[in-house]
Length: 619
Ligand code: COA
Ligand code: AMP
Image 1: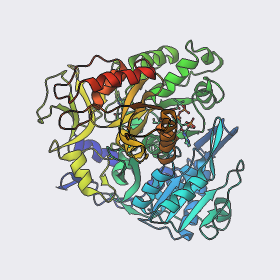
Image 2: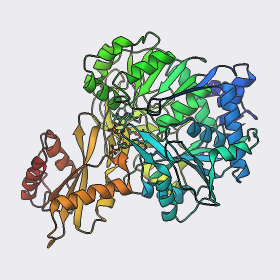
Image 3: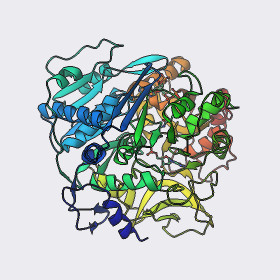
Image 4: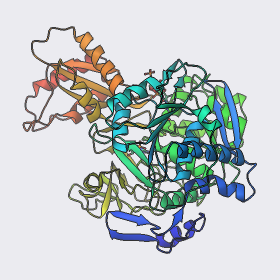
């Protein structure tokens, strides 16, 4: 089926206040607009419609929190009631269509309720992952300029509480644009100081609110901004439209994941990431599924059977997570002993994404679960899968190492540095021919030039994914590496450039480089190399400890920055470019060649010795 027909038909599955008469506005590439004259509301399509159609008593949300020993379920009717009330709270505090609301919360139902309440009002939510520290949060506050911030006082990690509220207070101090109000969900495990006049208690606000109805919005009005790492410390605010997104997501639930209304769907991720937006919140609810919100880890809460327990208890049909979660389970329970205690007969498939899936992990998951294990490739920018084995259309043979073929709507190609198509099987830049399908990002928040420059300038007419790979003779795509300084830690995307910017702030650091080194559990870990100012007499171990703490304070624990070494100097080309790729090869134990342009080859011997001193290669 051609793309136009496909998306016209898919749009029929959505409730519109005003049906779109135009499919795509292509007047000013690369700014394409899907369904430009359609009027709809994402929350209406996720909740109200199911209640109107008589499915109000079906389960919408299953909250399972081993870290707080809590389980709770909401029907569509109950969830709608909570969302409409919280929309009333936001509305009482002056939030209306187009206003931004930052959500800084752990994996609790109120996070999903806050997101949908924004959608109900036509307000734009921007969820910030809880593992980011104040500085990162402040950057996002200044960029999004939210009227209100919704937060929880704390998150619960297996070994400790994470006090979110003090991090938020500090972020607001750092930010130039202060929100008018913070609505705080006060969880009972921590007492929290509230700022008089600014901070409002979630429960008290709810008690005095009235439910509000959906606000119709244009298909191209933004539903959310989600910040993601680029090559610098300034994150990119990916903007998602409303109409194209809900059309694409609803289509994907049946065609990619093969789920029907009433099925239980579980994306074991976090609402702070794109997977959480698309497949914990919007996708499954649009499709009338029960979505699982799990506040726990794959291992240690309490054991590596945690995922199997959840699948069995709720009869999960499709599980979606990152390969790193399966590496963690496999490491703790290589024989799959914990599986024996649980009935997983309802599980139809496992989908993996977020990082390259090593064939060993995929094969182990396949043997252990005895269901198709589907690696699929996507990005914050795409919002839904670019390449996947589409279970609802036809299950193609699974080829470990490949996320299979492009999903209908995506024209994926491989180009060389000059923009020419490479030969079949040759590696090059993975690009997607414009226009991207509905549901993909429409711009970067208040940074249209950056949108064009970053993604559409190198290969005119194509979107540059930032990934490199190849396409084989069967049309299978292989995604091998990033072409930029982005690294992937446990399925979390981080910028080495951003970590370098923080390290460079340390008073003793003359210059530094951060590389992503291979890690058996998390896929990659950041490793910092610091050259200190001459004349410094401080203990190297103290400088390292301070540098590690600085990254934790400025970026957050999610950066998992724990590897750091002092070097005499950094290897460079004659033109002054730091040889990060060569250092990464040395650390990973990958064969490497001395670059012809290297300024001083002996520096690389020193780097090798410094890396060996902390156990690399093989660390
Ligand atoms: N709020 C606050 N802090 C958080 C957090 C959150 N929501 N999530 C993680 N952190 C903290 C952790 O406590 C940890 O801090 P620490 O250095 O004090 O121990 C740090 O951030 C790193 O966390 P994480 O990457 O989760 O590592 P881990 O060692 O705790 O767990 C895995 C390892 C593999 C179990 C874990 O990474 C995982 O479950 N990954 C699943 C992948 C995933 O969800 N990917 C999302 C894209 S699909
Ligand atoms: P994020 O925007 O955080 O979702 O990260 C997107 C990046 O993760 C992609 O650009 C890839 O580098 C990587 N990625 C995601 N899924 C896959 C996959 N299935 N195979 C290989 N890399 C992947």
